Length: 62
Image 1 (cartoon, rainbow, N blue to C red):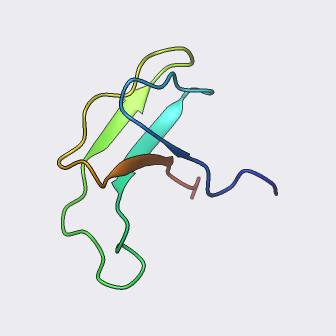
Image 2 (image 1 turned 90 degrees about the vertical axis):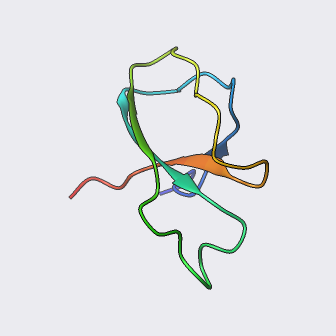
């Protein structure tokens, strides 16, 4: 499915309702301990992240 790994910056608007998780540049190698999660509705703005290298990514549905 295309767009699976799309990331969003603080201030971007959520494209869909859902839970988004904070992801970072090195998260694939090191992981982020206790990453922040936010629940947003479509059109809501993403909040700030823990640091400038972080982005938001939609959590996969289980």
